Length: 326
Image 1: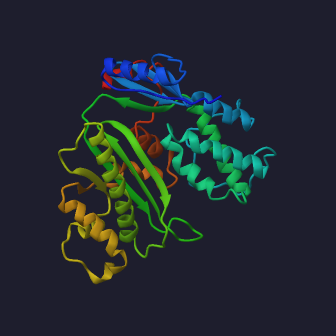
Image 2: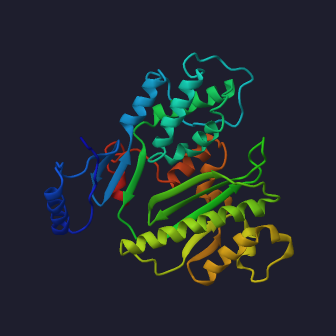
Image 3: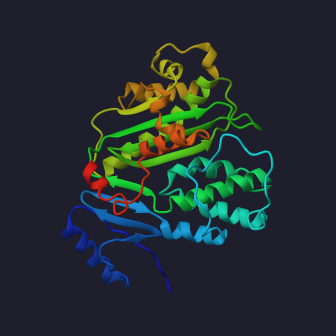
């Protein structure tokens, strides 16, 4: 027996029906009609919008950790750890810790607001300390309080724009920086990444520039993908960065000897600027959406950036606010 899930979508119902009929001749298939759930992701329909969430999957993780009745928290991280930590017989078990962290990786598909916390905890799967157990429990309690949250896909202009950020020498052990960026198609979040850089950056400008280079490669791929969907980007894709030195370096045609160690990244970004594929614009750190992927934040700041990231409760919970803002 061979079983697989197939999702066919488009804006031409006749062609979709033709594809289904053609496949049904060659394979034994069962047409389940309009999509409501796919690979554990719940898909809710509203006027001119879809809402993607993973409530059932999140509940299974909480059940695994024996935290289905835990008290919720408003923030998955904290700026200051307590002086002492309490033992947790379930989460302290190394195989259980790894299993829960591995399960949380899939939850990020609709919950980018927890990407930073999961990335931090994933680095200690080989030997989790009490402080990591404490942070994991905080994260699970936050998921408990926002278990219905997800990301909306709304009808809006199909213009691609992105935000890039990096924390310079953020890893206290290796002093490697982490690249963080996210991309929006109109008002809809479609891509995000939190990834440690492969080499140690000697300045904040260098770490930001490496993040910009990684985002540029991702944007070029997205632009080509959108062309396949007949959504060509007529204008350069705007990339927002809060580091003015990195922007000046990218726009400066004169290559400086002091940046010789990032020559390939400099040439790569500069080349796509000249080809009008991308453009770099500055913005204040307050408006930097990707800052939510960078570090632990205070609860008001975290909620502010989570809203910018469009992570929210479903339309049925927020009583039609999503429909009203489309």
